[in-house]
Length: 267
Image (cartoon, rainbow, N blue to C red; front, side, top):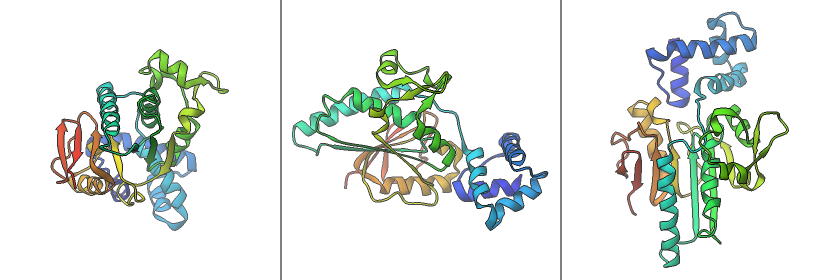
């Protein structure tokens, strides 16, 4: 598995430790079965070859996909509610322009950016006339395809209040699924992006969500990712991490506000 671990680290910055080797081998086995390849050695040769570029992407999709759900960590969204009210107050006093750009980095199957979009629409009275943009990115093509379709079922929907379910979702043509309504879908731009290998196109984000990603990174990968994110943030913009994550001082321009919340220094 060491060769696969090295490839995954080089591409994504994710360090798969010894305790995750069984999980890694089981996910790789799915790709062996899908391609009809008999051994891990043969599969390794494929993903290392020029002809295996498409399968390398499929492999990365398989090993980096993680579970998520709507309104994960409700305290983050309670903070966001207060943040939006503060932004509105500042704009009314002429202290800031009426625009808000948000980046959901490593958005997976879309639950996070759609949750953010619901927050914005719920506060549309105080954000009337604002330029509101949500960019949602992920390294995996498969999860982005799911996100763009906006169809969900089961556990992932359980945290959504009933009022929001009725307002923002409709029955899907696919039995057992609910589908995001167009007004919500239109608020989010989905794009493939690798935090470790690409700069985000020039845009200054007021708020960045990077949750449950850094836990898979070593210090070198954290530093690289956080430096790039910081460069894309507006002065005094906020970064939201997962509840068990920390920057570990990897980015000097970010100061800790709460255990999961950081703010970029002014200037």
